[in-house]
Amino acid sequence: MDAISGDLNAPHSMGTTIIGVTYDGGVVLGADSRTSTGMYVANRASDKITQLTDNVYICRSGSAADSQIVSDYVRYYLHQHTIQLGQPATVKVAANLVRLIAYNNKNMLQTGLIVGGWDKYEGGKIYGIPLGGTILELPFTIGGSGSSYLYGFFDQVWKEGMTQDEAEKLVVKAVSLAIARDGASGGVVRTVTINKDGATRKFYPGESLPLWHEELEAKDSLLDILSAASPEPMVS
Image 1 (cartoon, rainbow, N blue to C red):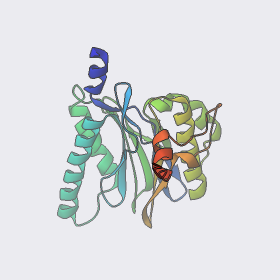
Image 2 (cartoon, helix red, strand yellow):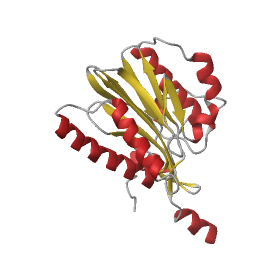
Image 3 (cartoon, rainbow, N blue to C red):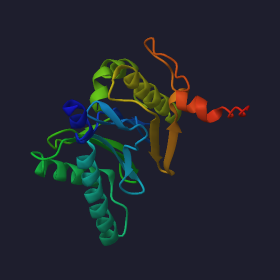
């Protein structure tokens, strides 16, 4: 009983799969939706892709509380920055602000982040900010517990100059592969595509994702069956 209560009271952790990919014209960010508390799933449909500005988004992994407070602070500072300059912040400015907060609080924060977006100066950019506050500008980056299963996959399939459709399909396929292998990743897949035309969110429910490695096809739960069935008339 103590073990069960300990899991229920554990901090919410997004044992996660987060991905950022550049393509010819913009970037695609993707993430699963499982948030866990110890061995329990606290939220099976959480949104791990957070908007910082109109043209910059952030993918969050690690401690849910830590990543949320960093995102809130950065969003506030970028709003002030935009008011002062009279124009949107660049992706580099947003990523460096995330890096500054993560590095200055590295002894207290347990979160890995991916910042991606598009601006008129440099186009689509992806920055990885792992634990400790390092910042890395990369053509693609992956993070969270599910990333361990994806390095070889990206080594094989990644290529420069992908189209938007190719990049979106790559992100969805990669997240679904991680969900198949990683017990801390699951739920649905969410993506955000950012380019000169703005940001477009897409949602891929679990039943639409491909099955891998002898995964069992999802079946209706007992609750779904009972709620869908019409009640039998009572006969006296």
